[in-house]
Image 1 (cartoon, helix red, strand yellow):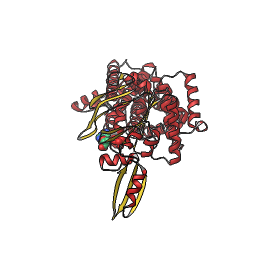
Image 2 (spheres, each protein chain N blue to C red):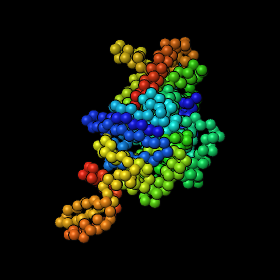
Image 3 (cartoon, rainbow over the protein chains, first blue to last red):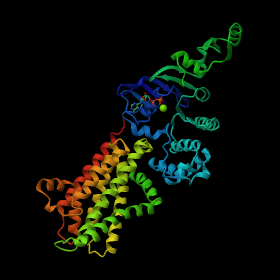
Image 4 (cartoon, each protein chain N blue to C red):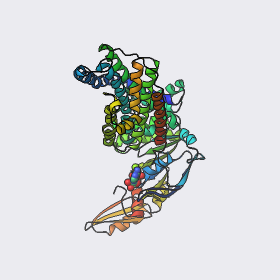
Amino acid sequence: MIRVENLVKVFGRIRAVDGLSFQVKEGEIFGLLGPNGAGKTTTIRILTMLTRPTAGEVYIAGHRLSTEAEQVKRIIGVVPQHINLDQELTVWENLELHGRLHRIPREERRRRMEELLEFIGLSDRRHDLTPQLSGGMKRRLMIARALMHHPRVLFLDEPTVGLDPQTRRKIWELIRQLNHQGVTILLTTHYIEEAELLCHRVGIVDHGRLIALGTPGELKARLGKAVVESFYNGVVDYHFFGSREEAVNFAAHLPGTVLIREVNLEDVFVELTGRRVRD
Amino acid sequence: MDFYAVLWRELVVLKRGFWKFFASRLVNPLLYLIAFGWGIGRSVQMPQGSYLEFVIPGIVALSAMTTSFGAAGTPLNMARLYHKTLEEYLIAPVSTFSFVLGRVLAATLRGLIAALIILGLALLFKTKLAVGGAFLLVLFLTCFLFSALGVVAAMTINSHEDMANFTTFIIMPMSFLCGTFFSTAKLPPGVRQLIEILPLTHTNLALRELGAHGSFPWLSLGVLIFYSVLFFFLACYTVRHCRD
Ligand SMILES: Nc1ncnc2c1ncn2[C@@H]1O[C@H](COP(=O)(O)OP(=O)(O)O)[C@@H](O)[C@H]1O
Ligand SMILES: [Mg+2]
C-alpha cells in the first residue's frame, strides 16, 4: 500500500531522514517508533506532501507521489502531530470545511458528519468552537476530520502525545476500529506501549534511519524472552534470556537489587542504540 | 468552483464576527475624517470644492487598501506559521489557484465593506460624491490587488513581527504618500514619478476623477488591472512553493 524508497531529507546540515526504505501492507497498522528528533514527523510530512524530499521516492496505492499528488490526496487522511483545528470554526464547521475541500456532495457530507461525530462521541459538542474542547476531544476531532472523505490510508503523527492514559486508550480503540473497517494505518510514536499494543509491525527509527523492522514479537524475540535488570553500586545492567527459568537461575546469583521482567521494545531500542527512547 | 470551499470558510468567520469587524473599520477613518476634514480641512483652500470632498476618496482608498491587505495577510501568516491550519488546505485536493482566489475574494469583500462604511459616513458629512459602477470597479480592483499582496507577504514573511513591520514600512507610508491627503501634482519630480508607479496613487486619482464626474481614468484603471494580475500570480507562485 505504501512503498518508501531511499528517502532522504536534508535541512541545512541536518539529515532528518537518511535513506529510509520500508513498505506498509494494505490493512496493516504500521508504526514508526523512535525518540524525539528521529525524523518521524519529517517522514510523515514527506509522505503527505507537506515537505519535499531531498531524494527518494514514495508510492501510495501504486501512485507515485512526485507525479500523482492529486490522486494521492484523495485517498489519504492526515492527522498531524500538532493540533491544527480551525479555532474560529465550530466542531461541525471544521468537518464541513474538510468535506467541502474534498468536494463531497451536500447530502453525503451531512450524513458522514453525523456518522463521524457519533463515532468520536462529540455529537453534543457540534456547535462548540474548537478552543472549548479538551485535548482528547481535539485529537478525536482531528481524526474524524481526516476520515471525512473515506481515506484508504490514514497517517497519524504521534496520535496520543500529551494525553492521559484513559484518553490514550480511547484513541487506540478508535484506531483499531478504523483498521477493522479496512483502513491502512501508518502512525508514529515514541511510546513503547503504543507500538507494542497497537501496531502489527513496527519500524524502529533513529537519526533518520531504520534500524529494525518487524512485528513487536519478532523484534523482542531477537533479544530473548526475559530480561534481568540488576542495580548494583549505582550501575544498571541488563541480561537477556531465552526463558524465564534461565533468567531466574541467573538472578539468584546476583548481588544488589534485581528485577525480572519480559522483554519490551524499549530493550530492543537500547540494545540497538545504547540509548533509551525517551532520552 | 473549488475556490468556494475556501471562500465559504472565510464567510462563516466574517458573519460570526461581523459587528466587531464593522466597528473596527469605523474607528480609523472616522478619526481621519474628523482630523483632516473638520479639523485641518477648515483652514485649507482647494481649487474646487472643500478639502473634505478632496480627502474622502483618499480615505476610502486608504481604508480599502489597509483592510484588504490585513484581512488577507495577517490570518494567512498566522495559519502558516502558528496555527498550521494552512496544512489542511495543502493536503486537500484543491488547486493553488482556487485557494488563492478564495482567500483573495474574501479579503476583497472585507475591503469593500470597509470602503462602503466610509462612503456611508461621507453621506453623513454631506459631501457630494458620484459613486457609480466605475467607482466600484476601481475599489474592487484596489481591494483585490492589495489582498493578493497580503497573500504574498503572508507566504514569504517568516514571523508575525515582520508581518507587522511590512505594514509599518510599506503600507503605512503608501497610505500617506500616494495622494491620500494631498495632491501628488506638487511633489518634486523624482519623488513624484516614484509615487506615480504605486497602485494606491492610481486608486486615488481614479476615485477623485470618477467621484467628481470627471473623464474616465483609463490609465489608472490599466495600472490597477496590471497590479491585480501581477500580485495574483505572485500569490499563486508563493503558495505553490511554500513546501520546505
Ligand atoms: N523545517 C525544519 N528545518 C530544519 N530542521 C528541521 C525541520 N524540521 C525538522 N528538522 C530537524 O530534523 C530532525 C528530525 O525532526 P522530526 O522529523 O520532527 O523528528 P521526530 O518527529 O521524530 O521528533 C530534527 O533534528 C529536527 O530538528
Ligand atoms: Mg514528531
